[in-house]
Length: 140
Image (cartoon, rainbow, N blue to C red; front, top):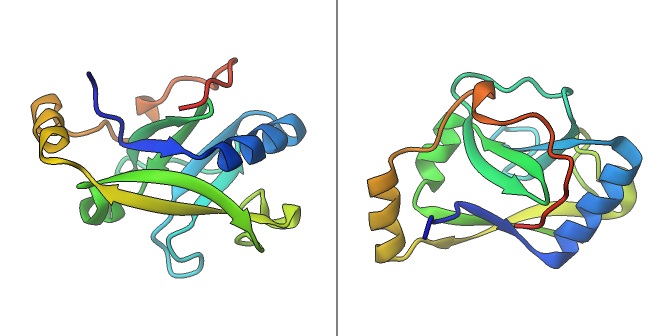
């Protein structure tokens, strides 16, 4: 069984569905920047330019999630869990006016998961790692 690098909570899935209904297809980028700390940032499709060093972690609720290459090096041994909690989101992220904010929780991969990830190799990088926006909103 393939090891997932990312998942989400039901609360985050609900917020993503709400944002998608208003804004259309979405993309997430797990930030490591100085301005937004380590918050997962939510953008409309095409609003954020994925760089060649950005690492594709997978999909959450049908939305691609990337992380910056240097940030991935810090977190590559952890499974990221995207959650949503009451509060004010970062100014650049779509949920900011909703009274909710996305938050990343994590857990360290088990030894068995680490072995599987080692066998499968590193995740893909760059914009060509993702498909076009998903027409379905399957929750991961």
